[in-house]
Length: 295
Image (cartoon, rainbow, N blue to C red; front, side):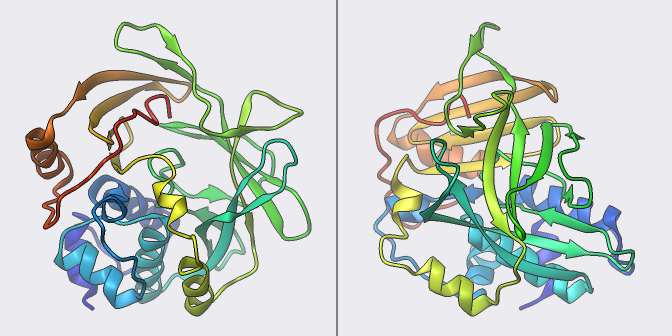
């Protein structure tokens, strides 16, 4: 595996000589704007596989994207090669009624620690719905502003925390408000959506592999629809099923749909190539229903 090829894949041309928060920020935004979060294999009869070399080949050599675990594993490898102190941690969706982990919906995030003791929650695999820059762990329950939203981290237990996003106003093509039900909501504060809960306990690649290949794990990627998502500091574009959507951040608290188009079978592959740089070698079979439009 070649670090320079991966840096080229994410269109990063700066220096990597000095480990810093600024470099970490640049690498994160480069990944989410260049490598799609996507679940296309699950809707084309492709067998689920796992391994660092497999993930690298898919993302770098095949110019594909990946799911949450794929993207964060490749970031972990990149950061480790550069010289960051980075750990893999498990995270889960939250049941909004009980505030407990949903065990059959695992996620993965990273914790980066600098020499000054500051720790940063880092995640490039939340499918366009999460933060684009790392969140500071040393400021619990403090609002952290980013171009695509306002976030905070709260403690749940000794080594368990919540990552949360302040509820945004979302507008349709005509400027009318639309609602989102994608995330669970805190009982005490309806202004905040829980993205996920996560443990600060470090895990090894083998631990992640065992979770990734659990029976029924594929359900986490097939319960809604096939997706491909890219985002930057101003826009988010995604394919969900056979619908292509572009959104624009008006400000951290307001996001608007600026383009929405239903695609036929021939258009589907053209959009995947032109908007996401993906050329499939299999027939994609999306579900017909629209999902995530308000996400």
